[in-house]
Length: 303
Image (cartoon, rainbow, N blue to C red):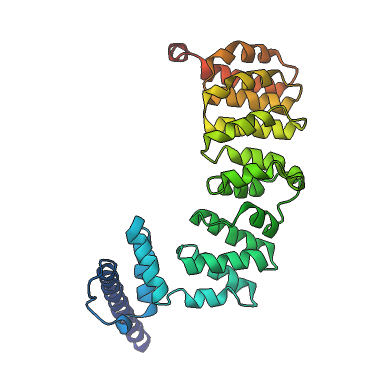
């Protein structure tokens, strides 16, 4: 009986605590909204716990956009809600630094961006540098291409998905800087990654560099040019894309087929049909897929 009564009391206390915390979180959220509108909050700043205010900021950050979101981040900075996480970024324990990055991933305030850039540049553990880099990429706050390449040791010929993802994140922020790297011999080893990323720049002036890369001696660079052209989605690149359907490299022909299909180049139908008899089984497979995609809708309906 004593154990049963103890469990009942524990349950009651737990329910009261949950109700009290819920009320505090709701009040903190209302006060934050009032402060965003430059109105006087209903209670002093220290009336609610730091966890309640953090909860309010976290939830509102998912709902607010534009100037209201910027104001929310500014208030969070003023209140020092990120201070403990920012201190943890300097901890000698990797686990604490990782948890801090995970928390700061929710808030793109200027303090957070500065701290994450510092960690990305100096942390001895590559996985943590990578986590910081992808958080900055999500914020649209990666440092310049030269800095990112240096900090993340991207100056290699390793064309991994992680490397490509970082270059693609840089492209909308620094299209001009990336194009300038193409003329620097020091970055020749990552030319394919740079060309590939230009497709994610949304900058149509990059088409000239992409077209020049289509005649590069390195087949990986030619493949990257085709991926970039397909991502930009401009059919005016059709002439040189069609020429690449006859490339001697199997991977380039596969990318050319995909690109022609993605851009719906109807003039490429005959060329792709000829590739249905290519010596490579992979090329034949991609050619058949592309032919189906390029067929008129009425033929698809019959099939």
